[in-house]
Structure formats: structure tokens, C-alpha cells
Image (tube, rainbow, N blue to C red; front, side, top):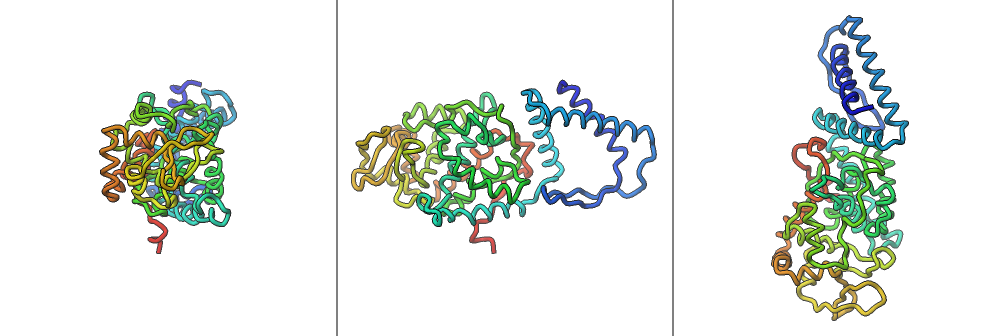
Length: 380
């Protein structure tokens, strides 16, 4: 079936059903919290022809839906994604979506589980860093030239993207959020993952990250090719190629790399090992200060090339981190952020919010401007 035929049948259904719409009352679907609006009062139309046309159109659309959801063909999947995207845009335009308060409840649940890592002996006692990494990697595949990748389809759920080398270990983060998805089944994976990234930053002492929902879930056919995420062993040219492809400039690159204030590398995932800072569960500008002020030397070990601080040999920097001090354009921003944490907070929040929206058509968003979610210390 062609898209033209599909659109034509959909238009016929819309025209017909507008004529037979009866007054509606508020209804609530427990699996997806959204509400219908009151229709105009008055008797329903009595035209038999209109009813027949509406029934025929509905049958045609039902046939389309049956084909989409039972076919395994690529064309069916592409058509299904197009319909989902159009439906999301229509819901956003009609405000036919869960409320901000509903998304706040999801945020609150994510915030509640961040510290469960301490009870399970995970890393440094917080799931925040790995959840931020999931949100970052789900969004950082965007290519502005082809308008592919980004957070819209949450394609890391599928192979081969889930098994790309840069995504090693992110099954941990996806598994953590699967429990949240079961509790709030109406939220899409793309919205859930990026909202978790927002919670990670805000709950660990960072700035407010503007965010809004509207992403849809896609299919394995929309997985991005390997190689779109940064290779930590590379130099300045590689860093620019990766971030310029997404649409970022040098200042935004340096601001985003500051996310390395959180977390650590694992030799059984990326091959690299160790934390960037002495406080890997706190969002501060310490990453920039250490990068500038510590003496960094190449680590002598059997793993990939990385640097360690000469004084304690307990911290690490990746080659892609170190180039920020070797490139004149990058270094001026490293100095600026080392000197002024609030400046970095402002620039980081803006860049991260942009990153999390890459690849999402603007008409899908449920709000014209991003929201600011309340942190856990603001809930009461």
C-alpha cells in the first residue's frame, strides 16, 4: 500500500467522522493517562450515507492498521513509524497527552532509585552517571546532514546498536529504567531515557536542564551505524567531526565534555579505567580545574592509551579530554569554565538540553518551550 493511498484513506475517515461525532465525556485509560475533551452539545446527525461512509473509512483504516502491525516488511515498519510520528504531532497539537505533573512523577521515581546503587554496591553509590551516559549516547548519534539518529526512536533497544562498542555497559542503565517503564507504561523510551539524564544532573547537584516530552519509539531498521559516537582514543579533529555533525560549535563541545565530572570508566566496558574527579557523583566544574592544574602523564599499563594524574595516580583523563588543553580554541573555554562554575552550568544546561532534543521533529513536542522539572528537594 502506498503512502498516498494511506493518507487518502485517513483523510476520508477524518472527514466522515467529523460529521458523526457525538458529544464526548471525559474518559481515562489507565494504561495511558490522557483525557478527551467535551464536544458540542446537540443531537447526533441522522444521515445514513454519512454513517456508511464513516464505517467504510474506518474499515479501510483498520485494514491499514492490521497490515502495519502484522507485516514484518521494512515498508510496513516505515509506514508505522510515519503514523506514530504523525499521531504524536496531532496529540501534541491537541494537548492530548499526559500532563507535566505525570512526567514529574516519572522524574520523582527515577530520583528515588538513583541511590539504590549504594545498596547494591554499584560503582560510587549512584546510578546517576550511567543513566546520564545512556541519555547522552541515545541522543549523540544525530547527523544533521541526513537528519537521522538522535533520541527520537530510542533505537539502542535493538541490535546492532545496543552492541556498538561505545554502548558497552549501557544494558545496566536500560535495565534500571525498565522497572520505571513498567510502572509508567505510557512514557516512551526516548522520553524516559532523556528524562533520566535530566534527573541525574539535577539530583547530583548540577543545573536545571530544560526538557520536554514528545519522542516516539521506532524500529530496529532505524538503528544508526556504528561510529557516530566519540572515540575516546582520538584527537581534536575527530572530536570536531563528531560534534560538528550534530550541529555543535567549539564552546558547546567543551561544555558538553564537562559531563565527565560524573562517573568513571570501566576496563570491561570501554577498556579505559578510573574516575575523572575525586567526587564522581557530584556535578561540579572540578573536571576543568583538574584538567588544567594537574600534571597528566601517560599511564603505564596494558590497556588503551589514557592519562593519569602524576600526584596520586588515582584519576584519569581520556585522550579526547586532554586535547581540550592542547587546542587553542578549546582551551579558552576550559579556562573559562574552570574559573566560573556558574558560567559552565549555564552553557552546559543549554547544550545538554539541545543534545537531548536532536532528531525529534519540533511538531512532536507537547510544549512550545521546554519544561523545568522539580528536583527531589523541591517536591514538597
